[in-house]
Image (cartoon, rainbow, N blue to C red; front, side, top):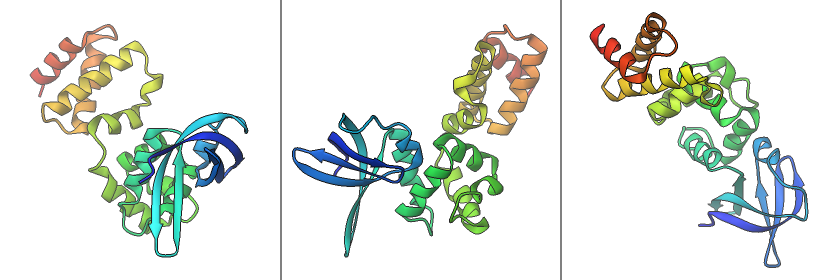
Length: 199
């Protein structure tokens, strides 16, 4: 299996690239998210890949991030979704948006992707929800990159409660209530202690 290619970016289009690796040109199909991350043509770069082999074809799908490749593979575990539709989904929404839609059960958001109807969107939610880790689920919904210092403490407190057996929704509700009562400067240990005491 080819897991990545490293070479010269010969051609790039929104749906495909051609990579020259030691004189051999590989055609690799990509999402719009990966296209946005590509360097200019005639530049050396590395692209992660996933091999798709069938009787009449041998295709390569490419990703500029490991996170996108993981989501591509997860999407293909959903019945009715093949590599082409998985790539379309990753062109329609970012990885984080897909995770957030799965966690929130947002059928409308997923079915806004070309080729994904209501039933397929429902299957994505049902079949992927349990495959997302608690941390992934929380980060997708909370927008972890944009969290303030107080928000980071809240996130860490929620993850700690989840690891202690709380359901995500219960942990979020408790931490929000306790954080409001204690104030934005409250340390994680105090938030967890008060949350456990008020259970």
